[in-house]
Each structure stands twice: as structure tokens, then as C-alpha cells.
Image 1 (spheres, rainbow, N blue to C red):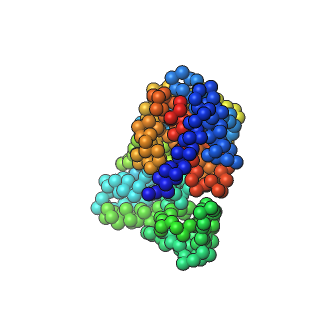
Image 2 (cartoon, helix red, strand yellow):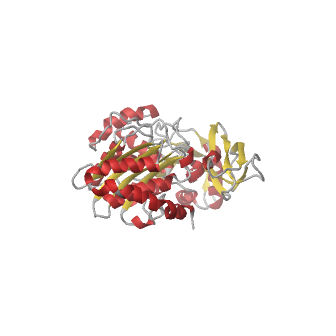
Image 3 (cartoon, rainbow, N blue to C red):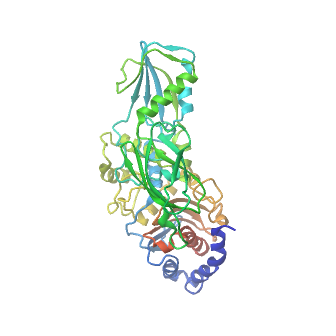
Length: 469
């Protein structure tokens, strides 16, 4: 029996009794009853909750709905909506191969899904041939900000995110297997799983012995260096060996290695050199192009699997299309407050602070009412509702919510968001009574004593909404 199953078997009946007895006898008391439930589930924690009836527009629950919270990856709902509205569901990223005279030009255009196999396909027309001149690498960053300075990377979980670059192959990551030392205080061991192209780790991480009361004292954290990453903190010995990924900052070095392999595999002889930092001539002729999947097919990775790299790339591409002069992260707040009202009727937008589109920045402050009004707007927009709802995480589906609340399968569509000290959830629900709802729950500043079972506690609140409203 898993920890989650044990927790539900032992604790859920008590919580259910507290939540559903007494005050829940009448709808007028729902608000107070949920406030009591929140105090029981999340004592000494900042919690915001708002629920909207999608048919009537009524708000049966609003607890701190207009208070600012750190949203985490719930922000990807906004990213998906903005990308679909501005770029369109069929927008595709592309990578191009050009020729002028004896020289060939490989132009990268910020395709976050480009893999090594895509380069093989791109160079296929040259298989067995000779490039008499140079192979020039053109990285079209479109003036993109390289990465968010205050973004908290989540690459140890998803191998995505930073630094962003116009040339992203295999997400620009280097993969390592993390192994524990023999005893608490020993250094963790990082073994590369494949050629890491000179990527360095400054390892200050230690193996630690965690007890059941302080499990999250054993988290790894990281700090970027110019040529690698400094790892510090420690990790729970109870966890099995785990793959961990880090972004590769030396893009040119990675590209040289990847392209050398492509040329060898396709038996293409390069007589000239691999050259960087030259512009694409206006008279160059395009000879091949590879495309990403359209945005509507990328949404599953953004909303179900919470892929930071794809989300951040689509977010920036959309903002660049709306405002070509966008080039700094500190413009995001002003820009979104200009753009969003053109598409959605949103609450609290002037009080919110936006920093980027994946929710990993702790400088962002968003209210439950803002996210809920966005969810309601999406639900009533025929161009968005089906696409977004069907690609949100669901119980039983490959997603960040796969193994949670299996009894709500087919009735719950959500975007998760969590860091060590918070857990958030927003999305759609069809309740036991058949009512269609949009809901947002933000749980921030969770005490250490509650962090081990924070997801289970949150799910009991979700289940109470399902059972009650």
C-alpha cells in the first residue's frame, strides 16, 4: 500500500467527517465550513480558494480570492491561452537549411522540441554529398531575453527551462545519474549518462539522513555558474537512484558536437569550417525545413506534463508577435496588462504582478480570482475550451495528476503547480451533483511539518468541493 493510500485510508474519513458534517447541511454555510476545513487541513498556511459555477456565473466559494499568491506552474494556463490566441493553434516552429554558392546555412528559430533526429531529417537532402564551402550556424533569437534572472529552475524534475537559446537540441540538457554516498555527510555522486560535452558540476551536495518530520530538508538546490551548475543541499537516502538533468550553457560546443555527428551519420563531407555568428544572406535559397508539431499538439506537454521549455518559448513567441519591441523580462508585466484585456475579461489584473509564463519565478503574484476568471473565459471561448480542457492533467492520464484522486477520473481537469513550500491547483470539475465548475486553490507558505503530505491534503479539499457543490 502506498503512502498516499495509507494516508487516505487513515486520515480521509476523519477529514470527511469534519468537512461534511454539521455546517454543510445548508448551502448558506458552505463558506464557513470550507474555512473550517482549510484550518484543519492547512493550519498556519496561506490559502486562497475560489469556485465559479460555469453555467450561472455564481461564486459559491471565495476564501481569500482576491489575495495575491505565488502561482507556480498554474501560470501555464495563461501561457497556453495567450499562445493560442496570438499565435493560433496551428502555429509551428521551424528550423531551416539554406544554400548560397558553396556555403550552407543552418538557421535555428527557437524550436523547443527540436531533437537530433530533426537535424538528420533536415540534412537528408545532402546525404552522401560534399559541402565545398562552410557550414554557417545562424541562431535567430529574435531578441529573446536569454532567461529569467529570478527563475527557479526545475530541471532536476523535468529537464527543461533555462537557459533559453534559439538553438535548442534535445532541450540543451546534460543527463547525470545521481547516487548517494555511504552515509550522511558524504558527497553525492553525479555520473554522466552520456557525453556531457564539457558541462561541469561544482558539487557541494551531501547525502543526508532525513527523518519523517523533516523530509524536505533534503532537497537539492542549485546555482548557475558560467560553465556549469553549483549543486548544494542534500537528498534523502530513502529515494532510489534518480536521473537528473542540467541545462547546457555552452550552446556552440553542443552544436559542434551534434552537427559533427549528423555529418558523419549522413556521410556528408565538409571541406570548409563550422562557422558561427554570421548573418543569413538575403539571397540564400532555402533547400529544406523541419517543423515542430503545431501548438495544439504541444499543449499536452505544457499543461499535462508542465514542460517549462516549451511553455516559456511559446510565451515569448506570442509576446514578440504582439509587441516586436519586447526584449526584456521586466517588460512582461506591463505588456500582459496591455494585451490580456483584448482577449479576456479578467479580474484583479491590475493588482497582479507578472514575470514570465511558466510560474517558476517567485516574483509573480496572482490572485485566485484572476486565474478563475481566466478559466471561465476559456470555458466560454469555443476556440479555446476543448483544446485546453482536454490537455489539462487528469486522474489516470499521463500527467502530473495521474495517480491522484482516481475516483474523480473523467470529472476533473487541472493544472498543478508546486514548489517545496506551496501546492496549487486550478482547472475544471464536474461535481457529484453534475455541476460544472472552474476552481482555483492556492496553498502557499506551507510549514515544514505539513509538506510531506501536502498533495494529499490538497486533494481532500478538492474532493470536498466535488462532494458538496
